[in-house]
Image 1 (cartoon, rainbow over the protein chains, first blue to last red):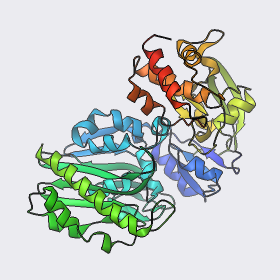
Image 2 (image 1 turned 120 degrees about the vertical axis):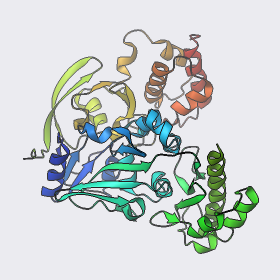
Image 3 (image 1 turned 30 degrees about the horizontal axis):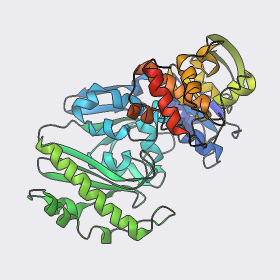
Image 4 (image 1 turned 180 degrees about the vertical axis):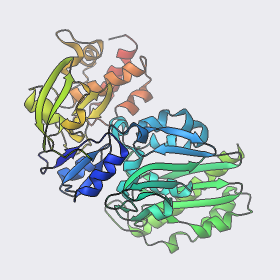
Length: 282
Length: 160
């Protein structure tokens, strides 16, 4: 398909990328392009300037620094699946990456791109909220760090504004007593989520985030509190999750009515919590 | 000082072992560069939305959908298309597709072959499950999936 005319630059440093994003109106960062190029075809996005991040190797690095797993925004989902650092520190990121779309998309698509799009059906926004991740954003005036909850602002909107560049996603490395789970219902084996839940427990303290039920990942705080001090067996989890659906106001679409999505959110939460509890027991 | 964004750019891309230097509009998709500029029409355009995988090529050795990559993003890279797989002779994988009747209309076949070839590069004897995962991004509307999976598994066993 013929795209609308667009200018292109491929900077060789992060500073240069930020300058380009700052200096040009309608400039947009191009990461793997697996969403952006396709929405440009639909004219759903019409950037005037693409700033291709392909040459910024420092944004592809995956490393562990102390007790934090640092993932460059340009790390592809395929690289996350293969990373020994991810496997040791927070394997749920790799198992989740392996369920996004297909091989070709995972070879190009990046973690930074997945979260900067902030499509409410994407895999990583709820997961990163549950894991208590933080995001580092560069701009012409410096660098700032925001929590995952601050990062996701609205449908297709994040804390990355004009002239900003997401550089890094930081995730606490898992120690003993940590367990993570992610469950949901998809369209096809590795398709788009209809509803999902991500759950993480660190020494008995829970963080649970739901996807597909609102503009941004939804923290299920009442369930988190209800799980504190329980044995986290199936009966306890079902009891803690009961009534969660009634607190949600999810959208209805061709795939699921709002009522069905409330039910799926509860089921997904039970499954994600049980997965996490089992991992935490080792 | 940042570089100035351009709307036309000279790209140098190695395609099937031949290096091409070409001036392209920056909005041109890689699949159009291959088909229209280089006349390599083996790479097909199916859905043009990044879903069907008919346009799959190898970019620096890994399968990607060439309708979701700009030609300028391939600047400096090596691309292999279905024309670059075998040449005059069929590869064992292509022969296996023929032997197992792994195509009906054939439209999806170039993409299927490129995804399967990448799998065999990485995992020379894949299981049926491995093949299904590797071909997840390739849609066949004749729904001849079963024979395609058999053909790839057989090619891996050297039984082509």
